[in-house]
Image (cartoon, rainbow, N blue to C red):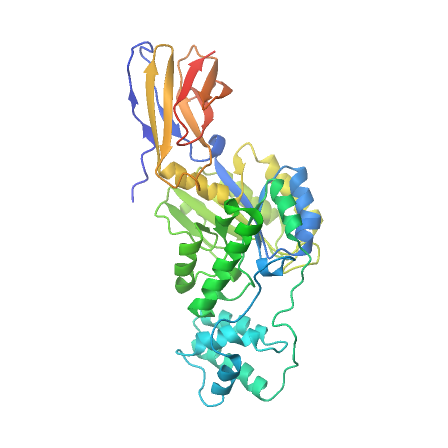
Length: 433
């Protein structure tokens, strides 16, 4: 596929700029940066908010937190099994082995049988299933139900014991500080092994919870647990969330997941999302090299994935390491646009679906920026780069009652300005000061 042509022709109404070739483009990244970086945190473990978030705020770095909504105090929706009575499912396992036809039902129900320890079988069977070890997954589920029938599990009053350290009041406060909060489902299940009703419940009710507690703005992004790329799970999730960290089926976007060995500079796409996950054994020099790699190109989006912090959560990283790393990211902000996962996804789509019309009029010109996407959802300003006459030193940009004053910069193409415009918000007037 050929990348969309983003240099736009200009309608000349006057010849005041004789010998001057006027060009306007939407820059690949906000503010004309060379790369984009998004910091994402999964699961909502306590020290993400007590340790990492204050460090981010100190450096004015926005991040995306994928939260398990059923674990937050005050949530309406919690984990449950949707389907036949679990007693009937248990009874059926005595006569019929787990197979392709009944696996999803049994894997969905196993964590909600009323016993401690059965949820682990759901998780581990899901791992085997996504590795295409189907027979092993079936046998594991059989072993769980056999233990239930034999009374080998201890009864539990709750199907899932949640650590409710986070409140919605706290989430609202953190969101107001510029961070994105997004769905990581209701209970963090293996989506690939859920029945359709249970999968939809996990995806839709998490979204509904976030909408009710935070507003529509925060229902844009999601991450299916365990980084799943299961085709069936993705087909449901695509219909519910506009942007998934797991995968986004954009023709213009090359995606390299956390396990990929491919270097982002070798992928021939308009954009490349490169995910890197830092675990306990990941060295700081390696983590810094990820930043160095993406800023060396002009189409890379580095999506960093973090989990535990200071001993709490999966693969926890020391707060001291994060402090130094966040500082290194901030030092590279002259070349990298640091933004939430949702904002970068919006920017790419707006740009790829954008249109610019420029008209000259006496000693100024007008710019109209539009895109064909949902105007309520895609409301991020875009950066435009416009070549201006050699005698222009400072420029005024007026749009929708707001005025920007921007300096003139010079590169190999001549004098130009970088400025922000809101799509679909009317014509902007650009003139020399």
